[in-house]
Every structure is written in C-alpha cells, then in structure tokens.
Length: 76
Image (cartoon, rainbow, N blue to C red; front, side, top):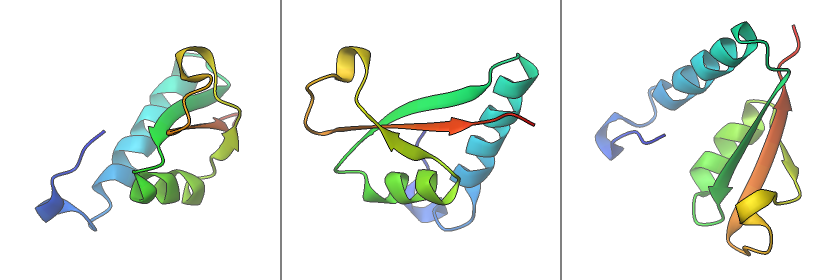
C-alpha cells in the first residue's frame, strides 16, 4: 500500500487496511499476515496501532534481515 506524501496524515492507509481486513473476514479468513521493511517505520507503526504483532519471518522472507512480518487475528 502506498499513500502519496502530500496525502499522508489523513487516515487513508488506515482506511485501506481496515477495508482489506473486512474483506478478508468476509472471505472467511481468520487472520491477516503481512510483510514490510525495517526502512518503513511509519508502516510498522500503523500496523502496530492497528493491532498487528511481529511474527517470525515466513516463506520468502525467512532470513531477510530487512523484512518485518506481522499478524493480526480478525475473528469477529
């Protein structure tokens, strides 16, 4: 997800993330798992504030030192 710098700080990314979580729940998924990078501190903070927890890197991200993998339960 990317929000242009001049549009940041308006809750756009949070709205997109929330909509994606809702959609995933409607499709029957129980959790959301994502990957971001250490050089994306704003993204990491958004995900943490949105209830995501850091998990061990998975799949293609295993052993990638710059990757940060996160997970959130979306059970309703």
